[in-house]
Every structure is written in structure tokens, then in C-alpha cells.
Length: 347
Image (cartoon, rainbow, N blue to C red; front, side, top):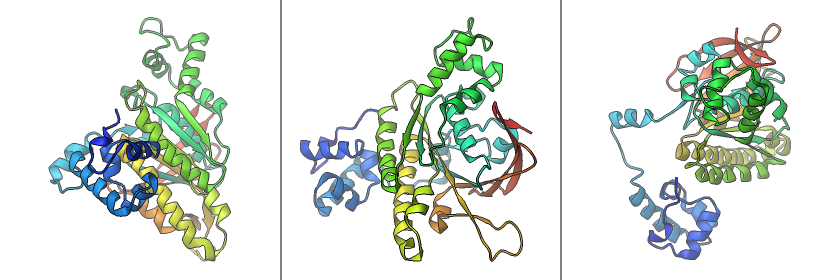
């Protein structure tokens, strides 16, 4: 998606346009959904001027008005569904992880949250007929969980038919020469898939917020590429916030920052038709006398902002229970999957 000509907006000169682009505001749509304060800080202009620019962008982008339910349905047909690679879980999710939505996956240590983000980073690069989105992934790593070796294991664990079609899609072989048993071709495919996963390690919460802003720029830059950004993973969303803001006195500031961070992530999904998947830590509620005392952290802000909330918990051996806790259009339910060396598998 090419950048819009920002200088054509009323009140935007070359210097202001450059500042806007440097801060990730390179399209009318991106400006149209910004707040005056946000734009004012980015372009070093007054809030009144920023409001005028936003209104001009809204007029040019034709955004922000009412539409009929039929129009909403037509627009939602553009939403993609990304497979987990587990039939029972995909059915629970109504076909897979949705683009233009935030999917939160929470669970205790070792439940398989990072396994999910690794698997999805591969699956997003698969052909559409195999549940992929033919796109690339961004991975914000706050807990040092990303392992390229794990990606290679999971690629090797894909079915032969999927691997061969992926070889053709990634240009490492044609339809006649694609062979999942060819080690050289498998090495090329692994390299191609790793090249399409953009990883950034977040050192603290402020850095993590900055990376979300940079993710908007990268997503915008790749929209005309062969593999545009179609997945943004944050693993985990809350680790730094939880460590840095300790005690009830700092809770309000933590929640405000977390709220802004979530809306930055949401903007990437909305503007670039990208699936946003965040993992979340949990805490035990000692006041819970009945049921599971495990609760996701992040409070109501995260609960309200997440479109889908999924709870992972351990079962016997390598089995994991995937529970749909909240979704706007899907019933609650559970599915079972296995975490194997070759990735996420059906029970």
C-alpha cells in the first residue's frame, strides 16, 4: 500500500508531512483514526491544527460515518482466518484466528502459549488452501521466548502436501520439483520462512510500546510485498508491565500505558488486515473457593480490548485444553490439542 500524498491535506506542508511519516502516519486512514493530541505530539503542531488535519483526512479517506449492517457484512468478508493447524481448535475459533482482531491467549507457565505464537508465525505463511494467509509475521519478544530452532522443528512437522505447496509459494521449487523428502529444499524452505518472521526483543515496557509503533510502519511498508504482514504476535503482552509497575499505587499508570499499547496494536490489525495475537500471564485468586482460581492479569482494560480470549491449560502428558472464554460471535467451548516436537497437533 503506497503512502498517500499528505501534502494535499489542508494545513500539511512538506515539513509536517515528513514528521507525520517519520511517526508512522503515512496514510489518510491512519491520520483519520488518530486523536488530535497524538497527532500534535508527532508533528509538533497545535491541537487545533491537528484536529483540522484529522478532519481533512477523514473527508479524503471517507471514514468514520454510519453504514448499514449489509455493508458491515460485506466488509467483514475481507477478514482472513488463520489456522492453528488443529481442526478442533479451528472449529472452536469459527475457522481460525481472525485478522483485524486481537486474540488473547493466557495460561500458566508451560501451558503452551509460546508454542502457539511460533506455530501461527509459520501457518500465516502457508497457502490459503491450507489455512494460511500467504503473509509474513512480526514477533515482539518480551520474555526471550523466540527460538528459530523451534520454527524449523515445526516446519518439519507439517504434512508433506502442505510442505510441497509451501515450497511452491515461497519460490524454492516448482510444482514438479517440490518434494518434502528433499533435505536441500527443506533447508531452503526453512530459511525462507525464517526470513519472513520479523523479530524484535522488547527490553522494557517503554521499548515494547515503541516497537508497536514501529510495527505500524513495517506493516505499511510491506503491504505491496509478496508476503505482506498478516500476523503480529506479542509474547508476552504483560510481562514488563507487571514487573515494572508494582503495587496498587502504580496500577492506574500501568493500565493507562497498557491501554495505549493495546490500541496501537489494534490499529495495526485494523489498518493492515493483520491478525494480532498476544499472550498473557496469569495470577491465582486466593478468594476463589470454587472453580479454577487462575485469572489473566491486565484487568478490565485487556478484557474489554481483546476480541477473543482463549485460556490454555495443561492436561495429561502433552495434551492441552483450549477454552474459549470470550468472543463476540462464538459460543464458549473447549478443544483438545497436543504439543509435539513437530508442532501443534490434533488429539
